[in-house]
Amino acid sequence: MIARTTAKPVQAPVIALDVMGGDAGLADVLAAADMAAERYPKLRFRLHGPQDRIAAELARLPRLAAAAETVHTDEVVLGTDKPSQALRRSRTSSMGMAIQSVKDGAAHAAVSAGNTGALMALSLVSLRTMKGIDRPALAALLPTLKNDSVVLDLGANTECDTENLVQFSIMGAAFARTVLGLDRPRVALLNIGEEELKGTEEIKEAAALLRSVDLPMVFEGFVEGDKIGQGNVDVIVTDGFSGNIALKTAEGTGKLVTGLLAQAFRSSWLTQLGYFLSRGALRALRAHLDPNAHNGAVLLGLNGLVVKSHGSANIRGLANAIGVAHDLVVDNVSERIAQDLANFSARRPHTPLESTVAEA
Image (cartoon, rainbow, N blue to C red):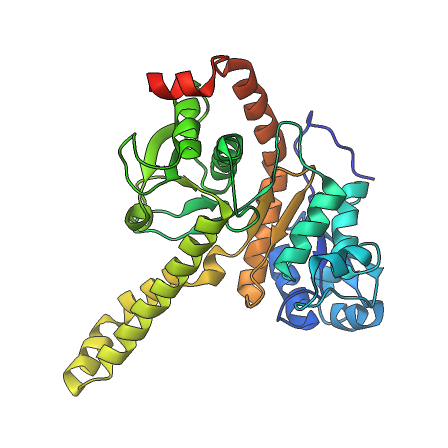
């Protein structure tokens, strides 16, 4: 069992991997794990899935074989399964057993490319929320004109109150300090305007609270949807309904831009010549917008780390999701969140929220 201590940093993270989740086959998932093992030589794995098939692939992947143990199961959570169906097989499916490994202390984090709703339900029921967190949030990276930005919540909670938004801000800032390497990330709430009087009462109250307490972040107030891609803030906080729409809109816009460029460059021999001359820059643009380069959404706020890989991610994308789990474990993001929550609780104003908003 893994010792749950914060006295020493984790030197050899153990990742519980659901090898049956997502659109990629078992072979691709294990190839991604092997790629991650090459990047992080101290990384170790618990591979949850059919032992015979895993053994056949490991015979071709000696590096991964030396760093992994297999936990056998033939049961898989399908993409069409409802969360209630997944919960009934929480102890026998590859997804459920990977999360259970984290709960039991056999692994530091779980990674799955499977059914998002099932993963969230299994994670919440098994791991529960941290002290001071009412609901977990799904956080991921979004490419911008500058550096990547953290966005949360991306769909775990369709409706959020003031406390949820404040907690998401604290968790998002801790996440950004790890994955973006920032000491004081710039945090903003997604809103319909940047003026202090704009938005719902929940958003305005959350902003007032975040302005009132000194935390390891720079609270920038509000950001509008058309400013997300500018990269002027590092963490964008919203409810899961708006966050999921923002994420899908950004992904769709990226596909629109690359599609329009492809059409334009095929329209005449002059534009084809232009493509030939600018193909290096276009490859860089495509790489920047590639979802696989930003793969790995994290369920923050649980008593254990769970990383969700995009179901259609390729081998490189899956390896990146495993890399996210590795970095969060090594940097002890859960301890960061717990400490920031404790500091906020000790420093927050004890006046009613209505008075705080009025003063702001």
